[in-house]
Image 1 (cartoon, one colour):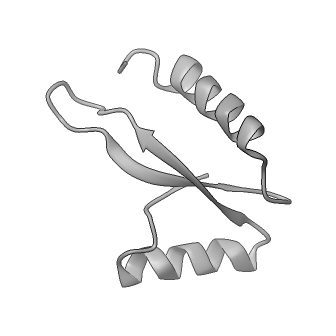
Image 2 (image 1 turned 90 degrees about the vertical axis):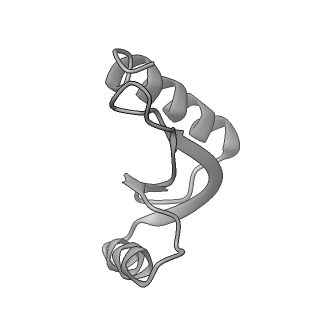
Length: 74
């Protein structure tokens, strides 16, 4: 689950909501590719369920997201 970093009150509330549902915020750096040419990459964070994920698992998920979900944007 992609979420904005807990900087704004809205982002903090959103993360807290998902944590109440059993999700875990993983602290690894992650960026969403721009969905339009010329836009910057967006710093986000990934949440996982039902437990936190290892760095290796995070890197595998990130690769999968980039290759399958965002492939036409990269």
